[in-house]
Length: 215
Picture (tube, rainbow, N blue to C red):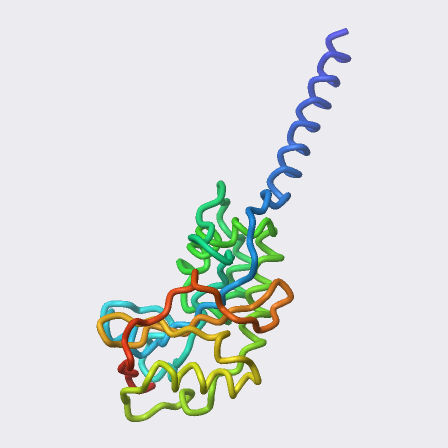
């Protein structure tokens, strides 16, 4: 009788563990999203303002220009969804692969916790979408080896990205801080095709920004 009871207990424990594993693997329920914003940061400006940062983009002779910051769920109006649920750490396998695109492990984990969980996708599917989105956008040639630094108008940056990607200027938004370029946000529909950004995507209020040289 004790043996039978032990067998039942083992079966129940195994079933419980299997259920926990299934729940861990399932993506969380998605919040509402209308499209995506691909965020590209201008590395020379970021590194110039953060001299103590030792991430890949700030290494000497890195030649980094626009680097991947993240892929964010976006809504047509109102604030975008953030921190939509519990987020388990991204697996080491995914992190190792995504370091080909992101400048640091910390940023990978941050983007999943803050934005990725809001998509309803699993970590593997979310970061595959991030990779596909980044690879779909061409950085204009004039920024790839920019030397020396210069001031440019917001309109010029957005126009250059539109021309390089055969897309509408309204699909690109410049972000800035204290007169310096922070990055470019690219608006993509759920199929990762360029679309016009809505008013919910921030726009630099300055007419022009400083872009530091690529090192």
